[in-house]
Every structure is written in structure tokens, then in C-alpha cells.
Image (cartoon, rainbow, N blue to C red):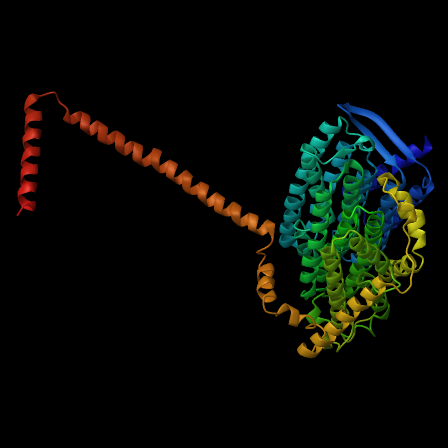
Length: 614
């Protein structure tokens, strides 16, 4: 009974605190920060207190199979723990970053409401209950983005609302079909094939999950939010919480709710490979710290999707390990970007440089996180990426292995460019007085950097105590036998080739351009790629922007039709009525009038014929 109460408190406490912060604004210094820190830490304690328990809450509610069901088991506890830890770290970072922000209380409130909704979505064991919490995050997503740069941030928030809202509509339809086919909404009892209408449910639910994770083509609001939304939002939502939720549901859909066919697995892997390559190619040419990271937040999702799509034990373990690793190093990278922005007032790479000596701790944490995302051994990103590469090889689909390897080359290349542009080279005159960030901003980044090392060197801990128990629900054969060991192998040589290629590409780019910032310009300006890049930067491939244009054309067409209908009823019909009335007046019924009209017509015809027959 006590464990069930704790499970409900995980949702109720942050929701109540968030709503209270919205309703009550105090001027007491550090009151909100202190209270938030205590509650965030207490939520982590609650998760740990029931860690080894399987807890189920079932409260009859609305009928029709819609009960308030929550379940705490190995998979949900892993995601719940990650959500609470990342929320705490981002909260600590925000204290100094948002110190002078007049609306910081709103952001703190939305952080806790988002945490409550995210925990509710992960712990829910009923599809309709899960959908309620899932949709609630859409509201906080819009509000958190809108706290940024005035009207522009509002437009970006609206874009996110529409894109994610569309994908959530697909999720609703998929849930409706799946629930009807399975004759239950209890998530523990849904196990369907993907034949016929079940296939439609599978694809629709997958769209909702992948869009939440940030997969293409539902990603386009993320780079925009990088420039408009508060940086703690980027560190919390696209980098951590939404990835955790999206990949959590993707794994449940592909490994639990459905038994996908080979064709469906191929579809998932194709989405993953396309997301890796297309997003990393865009990241490569960015000239803003946060915008570059935002494209990598999208690209790394592709590796997770690719691993899960293989449907093999090693691929799924690698995909979920990459989910944890990505949340660690990507959040750390965004926090280092925030430290740079706080100290320098900009994230424009053209205005940065030479910060290595002035911000040594930030530089060190950045290097660790960058090495991790680039797949440098022995960091955690190397381990999970190696597992995914091995899974693609064993799947017999060489094209996916090639896509993952090429994506790794460009990932390493873009972080060589980023690190060079921000921390190396000459320091601009206006940054000569910059010093290191406040300790409260460095502490979370330091914890995450340490985790990159710990989860790489001591990867057996997450393997044996987090990932393998969490994947027991999948019933995949061979989960217990998945392992990784550092040593010379074919894949290690592949990694050496990948990193060497990225390094020599960087040297070539610096030599050709004369600066670290221009290290990727030879790729940007390459024949064929330049035209594609120009179209991408003009948002030609953005479904939202093209959709707006299509809606505009449709609206113009409907307006034209509306004007035509108005002209018909307001102009043409009255004129015809007048003509008929005039004609009626001519018909007097007198024989002499008709004879006069007939003679007049005859004279006109004879005159016409005589004139034109000359």
C-alpha cells in the first residue's frame, strides 16, 4: 500500500508544486529555488525507495476500460529515474542562468508540471491515461518556448504545437484502433501483429512516438526553438525528457504492443538512417552553438531508432543505452552552451573564440561530452554506438551500417569545428574580460561529464542493472547474453577510420578556409550539395513551412471561389432578373407591337445582308 502511495506522489507532488508556483509569486529571495531543489531531490529519493518493487495502481474511473492504472516496473523505473535526475540537474543550472529573468517563476513552475506529466506518461498502464499525460506535455512545451524572445518565440511555440499536435492526433487514432483490436486499453495486455488494420495502428502510434523523440520530418521546430526558447528548456526537453518519452514509447510499440514484420522493421530502420544523415548534414554547417546542438539532438535519435528497428537483442540494448547516453552528453553540451552564452552574451560562433583559457572548466566538460557524442573510446557514446553498428552488420543490411558510420564521421567533424570555433583560436577583443561560469552552472555539467566517463568505462553497471532488467518485457532472445568489451576488433578499426577521417577533414577545412568556423565550408559549398543546402536553409524541405504555403494557396483559391459565388448572386442574378422584367414589359399582348418588332427585325437583317454582300 505504501509503495502505491509513493507511486502516486511521484505525479502529484511536482504537479502541485508547479501549479502553486504559477498561482503564488513570492519576492523572498531563493525561496522558489530552494523549494524546487528540495522537491526535485525528494522525487529522486521516492524513485529509489521503491526501486526493486513492482508496483501497480488500479483505480476504477470512467468505465469502458478506462481505469487510472499506473505501473512501476524495470522499464518505467529506468525512464522515471532519468527524468527526475535530469530535471534536478537542469533546475540547478537554471538558478544562476535565470537569475535576472523576471519570468523565472513561470519557468520553474512549468519544469515541475512537465516533470509530473512526463512521469505520468511513463508510469501509466492504460493507453487513454497515458495519452492524457502525453498531451499535457504539449501544452507545457508551447508555454516554455513562449517564455523566450517575445513574438518570435510565440511563433516557434505555435509551430511546435501544430507539428507535435498533428503527430499526437495520429497517436490518438492508432490507440483507438489498437484498443479496439485488442479489446483492452490495458498496456500490459496489448500484443498484436501488424497485419491489416493492425498495421495502420502500428504506423500511426509510431508516428506519435517518433515525433515526440524528434525524428524527421517532425523535428523542424527544434532548431527554431534553439534560438528562441530559454536554454534550460533546450537542455531539459529536446535533449532529455522528450527523447526519453519518445523512445520509451517507440520501444513499447515495436517490442511489446506489436510484433512487427520484416517490412515494418525495415521502415523503422529507414527512418532512423534518414534521421541520422539528414540532421547531421544540417548540423555540420550551422554557425550558432545552440542551433548546431539542436540538429545533433535530432541526429542522435536516428541511432536509437536504428538500433530498435533491427529487432535484435544487441541492437535494442544499444538503442536504449544510446538513449541514456544521449540524454547525458546532450544535456551536458547544452549546459556548456548555456555557460558560454551567460558569460559572453552570445552563441554566435562568429563572435566567439579562444575561451579555453578563460573558461577552462567549461572547456573540459565540453571536450568530454563532445568526445562521447563523437564515439571516442572509452566514453559512453562509443559503447552504445558500437553496439548499434554491430547490430546493423548482423542484420545483413549494409546500407544502414554505412549510414550510421557516415553519420558518425560528420558528427565528429561538426564537433571538431564547434570546439575549435568556440574554445580555440583568437579571442575577440570584446571577450577579453570573460571569466568562468558560476559553480552552480558548472556542477550539473560536471556531473554529466563524469557520467560520460563512468558509463563508458564501467558500462557493465548500466548493462546489468538498468538496461537488461528493463528489457525483460520485450521477450527478445539473447538479451541476457549481450555484452561489450574494450579490445581490438573490426568495429574498433571502423571507429579509428571514422575519427581519423573526421580529423583530416577538419584539417583540410581549416587550411582551405583559414579558420575553425569554416572547417566544413568545403562540404557546404560542394557541387550538388550547395544547391540542396540552399533549399534546406530556405526551408524548402520543412513540411510545416510548405504546409503553410499550401494552406495559403488553398485559402486564396477558396477566397476566389467565394468572390465568384458572391458575384453570381449579387451581380449576375439581379441583372438577369432586370432583363427578364424588361422583356416582360415588352410583351404587351398587342398585335401591332409584335408586327412592328418583326418588321424592324426584318429590315435589320436585310440591311446587314446587303452591307456585307457588297
